[in-house]
Image (cartoon, rainbow, N blue to C red; front, side, top):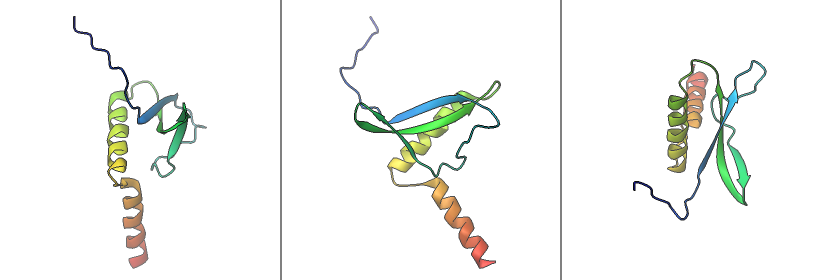
Length: 91
């Protein structure tokens, strides 16, 4: 009654949830862009460390927003680094 089946859909983003450990190496700024090859297509991949009490939905929403901004040509992490590099060089 309320079902709808889509014959095909493009997947643009892969989010992998990993149990957080001290030894887990995570790129916190997001400069290393990871991609996963799925059926011959390169898909952007985010690895999110999760643990009890963390708001996973907010982390996923943030990853999606970051992906959309990058797709539009705005890289917030690189802009932050450029801004602080300029600030450090001026002092």
